[in-house]
Image (cartoon, rainbow, N blue to C red; front, side):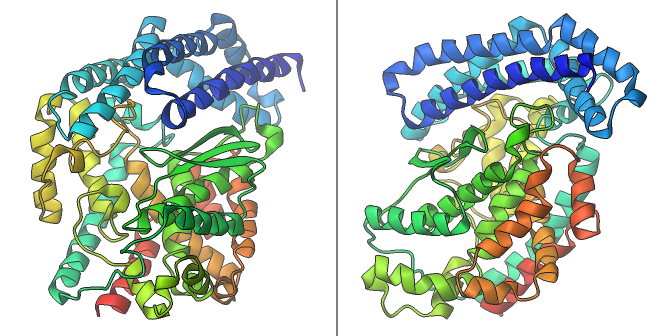
Length: 497
């Protein structure tokens, strides 16, 4: 290792340390912080963001990166990849003045608090001014980064490196073409699937205990993770040794708490499966948000909503909730996969979920590109819900205010959810091919075999490869809608005929 490359790793390790502190403060804001701390926390996070931006945009670091990039031929492959990753981040940071980075961090904290108040009041009116400010700041960032390209692509790259609207549009269009006729079949079937395995009266403590048992069986190491409560379930943390997951529970409906915990544990397993030796390295961390999302969606939908999973876990759920003693395997499988139009994205079914993403993607794309303004958002949302799902929100809390992403400035994030669904189905097909008796193992409660396959084939790579390379390496094919189409069509056939 050259002296110059060692200096790069040392500098980047300190930047990651600061980002780790930022992550924990953000987690605390959502989970533990008393409401009275909101104003000071906003300024603390803004200051920290400014410090991080200053480190990444430092002229000395930029000079060092360009020096190393100029003699790539002398570096080992892993070192070349690390230099490329750091160079990408440095170029992004140096395109944005420190003032703008601090303004965005402050606006994010304030906008999240504004969103929280507006969501509780179920009223868009008090939030739209703060969101308009956030959109303006994000347009400014995109304009500085995009060059001659689309503004939205510059923000999308933050979450899915290398992805563009030109690449995503055909995939989302194909998902729409797949979903609409399947949804029409579901609606036309007029089958009312009984929800009694999940809907009724369920003690929250029993729900949390059962969810914890599933998460532990999945392989989450609670010596290196936490499972807490928050308004909006998420998974955060700083490294494989400190993963923070949250969920929320409803005594009248266990689906959100159970499947939400499994979903976030899928994220957590990915984090814990990363190489701890790379935790302070440019090569450390998730490849992309879509790959991250593939792991949560795989465990939630491809595993936990499957018949094999419930062969093992239904008897244990009955012990947790004795009122379910006569529930059958067919009933819990159908109730796990009930399909139809719904208002809330995080509670929507596997079939219609992608329509929720299409709506958000098209709105945020048009917001950033300047085709619509923040003041138009509620009307655009309600019109989109009617067009895509045939329903309209009764109030803003179940409509335009339901997600925290835009309040947090996460424009470019939403399409990674649908990409994650596609990756999940493709990875699961590859896992079934590699592990011939996978479903039989799941039916016996063996979740470890799948976890270890994922750890070997997906998790352990960190950022040593990009997403396109990974999916071809693992499945032998580029990303497409095909595996997901087979997966979701089989479920519609099984439940709705």
